[in-house]
Length: 133
Image (cartoon, rainbow, N blue to C red; front, side):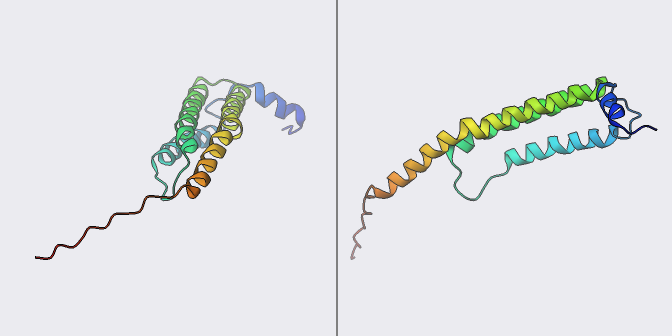
């Protein structure tokens, strides 16, 4: 069996069939990724979460879920592996844009607001006078 560069490139353009030894591990990995994304979305952090992260999390989860379901359909349809790799690259591009371009200005704005709030004096609590009976 030839394991050279030509064989590797040829495998990218061949249909991804169920007889391949990578078929079931890929299907199980997709199922595990679907479950992991749903669990990540619904877990709550104990610390304060910036509002930008709260706004970005649903977009990231839905982008991942749509991409994973799409790839699962591509695996079932037995398309070439190159199409699957391109689908994952598009999903990764969406996530990089979300967390590298869209989120940082909102996170910086939130941090400025938190620093500004430290300098604003808070109103004092009013104490109730004890009643003497």
